[in-house]
Structure formats: structure tokens, C-alpha cells
Image (cartoon, rainbow, N blue to C red; front, side, top):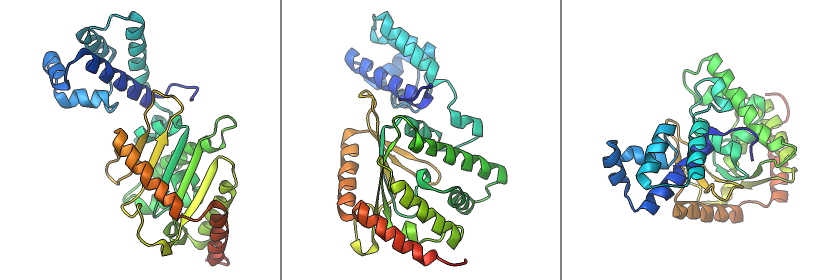
Length: 287
């Protein structure tokens, strides 16, 4: 668990507890909205951890739900206060995927599938710089520098001396073949992958082109799992203008099954290492 306050996680835990208390009270989200003179979608956003909950709102909801336990009320008020704090990523300006960074920072394990690029957690600085420059139209040098710093700081989880992030990544062969930056950038990036793949808490698998159709053809996704039993697993789908977070058990189970199929179809880790070393030969020499 993180040593510092994580506002994303605090907001998510608070929302989950408020949903539980509402359900125990027997009230629907619509009934709560009508009593508090707010919209029903706002209640849903609060309970899903997608909207900041002020301590005053927590107090009003506790009264409405008939909560008598003062220790519980104090705990919820503390979560509301923590949820209003700034995450470390906020100091870098407008980072659009801040909610994901907050979840990633608290995750104990992540399983991800990437069809086109090397995942951000595994990128070298040169590769990351080329990805940012090539995928974000009209990005300013200042914005690009901030995003690069955030991306590299996220990677600290992989090298943490205690409880490093457990990462399992399945990469489509395309991620190894697409030349990002230059041939030299790619050669060093693939060498970096082989080094990371040798770490005991990181597992890499490559999905070769000749596998054909597979469950990942619809695009990238990540499954985040947490050490705290109160934090439900999350499926994260990255999109250009907005991201999607799935928390329903049926959705998480579906993507878990999809990932199991990808793991079964991909090369084993030892074969993946040989595959990457062979792919690296294509980037030998100048270019």
C-alpha cells in the first residue's frame, strides 16, 4: 500500500461505502437525489468515485441513511478530506489520465494487453518521448516534457525495493515491429524489454501475428487488482479523448477470461525472450 494519501483511492473507497450505506437504508439513488435536491447522475458519480464528495455532503448522506456510528462517520469524513488532496501527478499540470495513475499507484498487480505500442510502464525515455511527440497532435514542448516526466515516475513502482508492482504484459508482435523514433531507439527499447522480463515480478509474453484472430483484436485493456480486499478490481480501457473504467464483477470476469485466452495463445516467457532477441536483429546497424 502507498505510504502517502492517494486521493483517487480515497474517493473510490468513500463512494463504495456510501453506496453500501444507501443500499442498507433501502433507498434508491433516485430517492436520495430527490431528498437532497440534486440529480440522480450525481449520486451515481459520487458512488462510483468519479466525483469529489465534500465532507458536508458526507454528513448529509449519513443523516439521511440513519448512520449512528460516530467512528464510521468520522472515517467517512476523513476519506472525503483525503479525496480532496492533490496526487503527485497534479504537480505536472493537466494530465488527462490522472484517475488511472491514482489507481495504478495503489495496484498490487496489473495484467495488460497492448496491441500497438510498448506499454508506458515498460518504455525507455527515448521511446516514450517519440510516442508522446507522435501521438498527441499540437503538443507543446512543455506539455511533452511534463508527460514524459509523469510516465517515467510511474515506472518507479516496478523498481520499488518493497512490494514492487506485479506486472503481466501481453504484447502483440506489432508493438515490436512498429518503428517508433528510430531503429536505434527500437533496438534499445527491445533490449530494455528483455532486461525487464528477467525480473521476478514482471512477466512478458508476445502474441505473434500468425496466431490470427484473438480476444484482444478490439484493442488495449488493463486489469488492475489491489491488495486491500475493500478495493474491487478495475478494467481500464484507454481511449484518445476519454477513458473507460469497468468495475462490475461480470465485466471484470469477462476481461479476466479474455486475458486468460491471450496468455494461452501467446508465446511462453522463455520463448518470448528469444522472439524479442530475434526481432532486435532487424534494428542492428545505423538508422
